[in-house]
Image 1 (cartoon, rainbow, N blue to C red):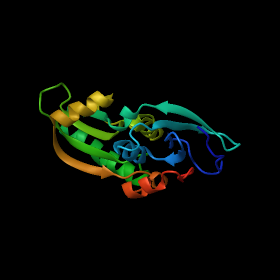
Image 2 (cartoon, rainbow, N blue to C red; image 1 turned 30 degrees about the vertical axis):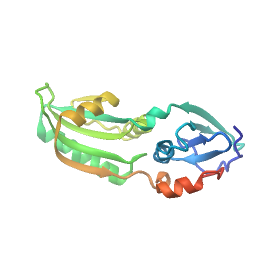
Image 3 (cartoon, rainbow, N blue to C red; image 1 turned 45 degrees about the horizontal axis):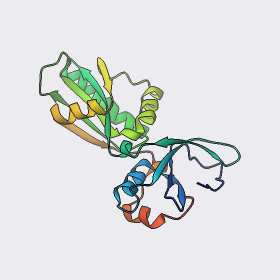
Amino acid sequence: MKLPKLDPQKQYDGLYVVDFGDTAGVGYTAEEVAMLLESDRYRDARVYKVHRMLPDGTVELKGVSSRRFDAESAFVFCSRDAERASKDFDDLAALAERDPLPCKARLVYGGLGYQPAFPWVTAILYPAEYEDELSAWLLKHDVRAGETVDAGISHATVVANNLQVRRHAQLASQAWRASRSRDEVLRSVGRAVQR
């Protein structure tokens, strides 16, 4: 796979390279990669994440399994008290408004349908491929929501299957990572630099 030299002034860290076999494109978002992999024509494409941009315009890459783009993950903040979980929801929504997340996400608040020790939940659900970025965002803001915290794909499943949602919000992503429409992404295949 041959990649073009990139402008080191642009931000490519965390974006993706898609190797289509005969061509490759640099600068896809995870959502755009998922669109490509859903199409019959590109389902076998190989995907790499830009780990680091080097000063000479080359990049360090990390291979990514295509299954990561189908999965949803979650950070689940659990509390004994409904009021605390509701406040966590408000605090996270306000924080995401001030400093958008690295990806689109859903914020939900509610009670679990069974009776665990911490039945009230505020959860952030997001594409699994963004686990590192979302973790870094939470750490950057020193988020201290919930009395306990769980995370991962299996916890997203628990929330989806058991949470009686009382409130929800769609959280926007950082503007520079905004994804294009499916038609735009498919039309751009063959272009070496996507952004």
